[in-house]
Image 1: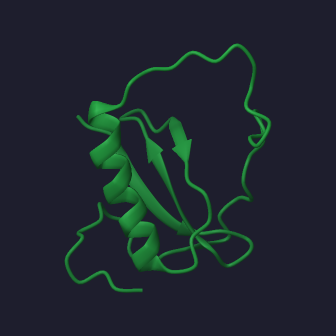
Image 2: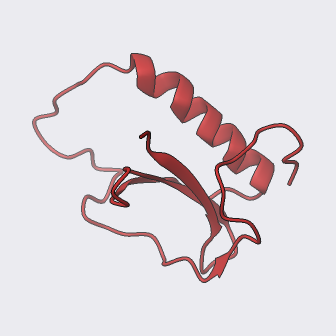
Amino acid sequence: MAGMFELFIDADDSFRFQLTAPDGTVMAVSRPFASKAAAVEGIAAVREYAGMGHVKELATAPLDRFLGSRPHAAVRPLSMRMPLQFQGMAG
């Protein structure tokens, strides 16, 4: 079974998505997006880049990223919790 992208609205009313493993473990959380359509485009980009992505080992953590930080918890789930269909998902 494949992982799933879950789209949600965070505490700041921004759209985010998370990638979950088949067992429900959250593997990645996106940055905030201003609209649902932009978040869906972000999912499409992750799907495109991840399959061919190279692994790069860094000696230290990048200064512009906060390792271990977590985004605000989702406070309002979208009306439908199902795998995203890209057609017809305008924000």
